Picture (cartoon, rainbow over the protein chains, first blue to last red):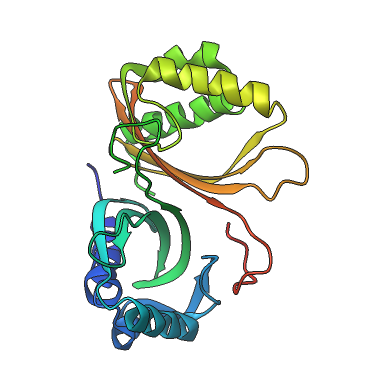
Length: 129
Length: 129
C-alpha cells in the first residue's frame, strides 16, 4: 500500500458514510458526507442529494433490517471503490454491489454503482465475495 | 494521483488484459496475463484459468461483435478496479460491469465482478457511466 494522507482521508470519508449513513439508513447524516452538488449515476435513485435522502428514508421504511456488509475497499487519488453485500432481511441471499465514489473538497461528489442478485447453484462454487 | 511504479504496472497489466484478451475475446492470450492459480469469483464462469479460456471461446462464438468499453480504472496496491460497458451487438443497451482484480507476481491472480443490465426510462436521467 502506498496511500497518501489525502487518499486515506478519502477512503475514511466513504467508510464513514457507510457506518453513519448507509448502514443505519440515516438521511439526517447525509450532509456530513455528501456534497450539495452530488452527481448520482445509480439507475435506482433520482439525481441529487435530496433524492438520496428520500431514497434512504424509503429503504429504511421498506427494509428496516437491511445490512450493508463491506467486503473490501480501495482508494486511488480522489476515487474510492467499495465491494459489499446487501441483505434486506435474515436469510436473504441479497445483492453483490460495487460502488465507485469521487471525493471532492472532503465530501462525496459523484457516485456510480453496479448491483447483481446473489444466486445459488451457478457454475462457480466459489463465493461471489 | 500518487501511484507507485508497482501500482502503475498492476494497472497496465489489467488494461493490457482488456486490450489483448477481453476485447478480442482471445483465449490464446490468457496465459500472458492470468495466473495458473487464478481464483474466479464471477457467478458466470466456472473456476480456474482453463475455464476462463473456454468462457472466452464461448462468448466469442456467441457474440463475435461484443465490445468492452472501459470507462474508468483505478489501482490501490495490488488491487485494480475497472468500470466498463459491455455491448453484445450494435444497438445493445448492454451491461454495466465493475471488475476488481488482485495482481500477484505480475499476473492476475483473483477476480470479482458485478454486472447489471443498462435500462432506459428509470428514475435517473444521468448516464449510468
